[in-house]
Structure formats: C-alpha cells, structure tokens
Image 1: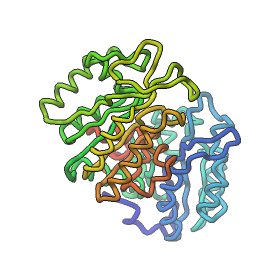
Image 2 (image 1 turned 60 degrees about the vertical axis):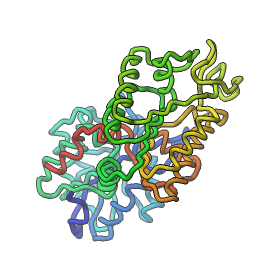
Image 3 (image 1 turned 45 degrees about the vertical axis):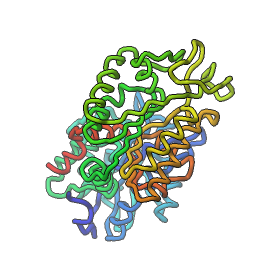
Length: 396
C-alpha cells in the first residue's frame, strides 16, 4: 500500500482529498470535529517535510451552486487552531485565481478550496473538472475514506492525472488496515453489533458477516423487521414489510452456519416519537398498537453486555435506539460502555457509522476503543466485500 510515508514532500504541492463533511450548527460552528481531527496527522506530515497543502472537500448536499451554509470558509477558524497556521481560503475550487493561489504556495502553507459540490461536475466524475483540480498540485493524496465508495471527480478520476504520484493519507491507510484486521485477522469470538433504522441498509454486510462472526446482535429500528418475521407483534414500530422474507432467510442462514443471532427480548416503548412521550418496558414481541419501540430493554442490555465482554473482536455499526433522546439512550450507552470495557480487557473493537461514532463521542469513549472509522457507507460497502473506487484509483 503506497502511503504518504513513501514521499518526501519538500518543495512539493500536495492536493489532499479530505472528508470535511462535518456538522455545523446555526452559527456555522462545527459540532463534531472527528473527521477534521483524523486528517491532521496527514496534513502535518506534509508540512513538516517542507511541502505545501491544498485541501479539497465537499460539505453537505448543495443543489444549485454556492450556498452560504455549505461554504467551507466556516471551517477556517478550527483549521487555523489545529494546524497552528493561517489557512488561505480560495473562494472557488478551480479557476484562474485559485490556480494562482496554489502556484504561489510556499512550504508550510495550507490552501483550502471552496466546496467541490458547488460544481455538479464533482459528483458526475467529470474528467475536465478533475484535470483542473489536478493542475493545482504535484502529488495527489486521498485521505477521505468516507467518500471512497463514490467515483467522484476528486475521489477517483483525478488520480488518473497522477500516475506516479498518488498515495493514501494516514486516514485511508488506517481505515483499510483496521477493517482488514476485523475481517482477515479475526480473533474469536467475533461479535458484530448492528443497529440503526433499516435492514435494507445492512443486508450486504449481514450476509458477508455471517461467514465470519460467532454472534450477531441486532438492535435499533431494524430489530422490528426481524421480530415481525418471527411472528411477533410490534405495534407502531418501524418495519420494512418488503424485507420480512429477507429477514427470515438471514435467520435461517445463521442457524445453518452456527451463528448466534441475538434479537432483543424486551424494549422501551413510547406512545409518541418524542423524549417526553409516555413510555414503558415490555416484551419486544408483544407491543400493542399505538406504541412504538424506541430502545432495547433492561434484560437485552444485560444479555448483550455479557456477550460483548466475552468477545475478542467487536464490530459496532448503528445505535440500539433513538439515543439522541435521553429517555431512549440507555441501550446505546450500555453497548458503548461494554465495547469500551471489552477493549480494555484486550478485545479489538472497530466502531463505524455516523450514529455509532456520535454515541462513542457522546459518552467520551473514543479513546477507549481500538478504532473509530470516519466512513459510514464506505465502511459498510468495504465490509460487504465491494471494491471501492477511491481505493482502486490509488492502487491501479
């Protein structure tokens, strides 16, 4: 794997595809710096060598060109602080002025380009747009694992213009190594914890994991599709009716392969989808109409905790309930604490997906797990066994 450690950047301009798609509040302040923090070592390595850095990223999903709320200029104060420098901002990601700013960079300087997705050519993987970005630098570094599953101009096509000077940054290299450690260098028992709203988002990863895991814990909204498939009553809980047969197939395959699938036996239910709703704890297979499951129950938490603490390899993707609401956060918090506890005992733990990462950060446990992935969809696709275009572009 060719990483930035294979290059001395002295006197070179490196254009880095980073994933600065970070959440901003109504004052345009960053509310979660995880993705920015992850890229700092890559940037600093190049600056320490005596090279200059051009940062490019998308932010949000602008529909029709530039929008104030999606401008990357809002990230400047945070970057200045973390890099201990004055980051130069280009109000466009291509064009004469941007090219001039790039050409005048000296070693140790950082240039941040405006949002790539202000151009539709970015998502379309346009070759001419990619070439304009490529003309800004001597070396291309891909450090945006979160977008590696997209064949966009800045993540994939641009690499063609750097046949001998394209490398992975530390984020990409660490993501690949960490996922491979879970999939290829697995210590047993291996437990996967999958949550979130939809089974449809996780079918591929479930089918791939059944060949590797000993335990598969299923929580969150997706648990009710499985409970419905098993003949349970789920009231007004979230369900994907068209995936009932798929859920049954998964349960059958798991049984044939000797994989223990754990579905919550109890749930915290509410009569409305808000934190102040009336709530009670019931058997998850017997939820009455007008009530919906918003968290896993006490018995399930204890059962899952024991399984996790006895595991040697752990993958966690997706919360156990609506953890953003404090009254329905206990299940997700229990899982987070158990994963951290197992890691302390020597287990290898990989956390991925925006909500799982948010939960780990909410409970201040990021330092207590082995690796926190910056990629949601990209991690899922990689773990499904798919070839990610952003990775292939560097390896080709």
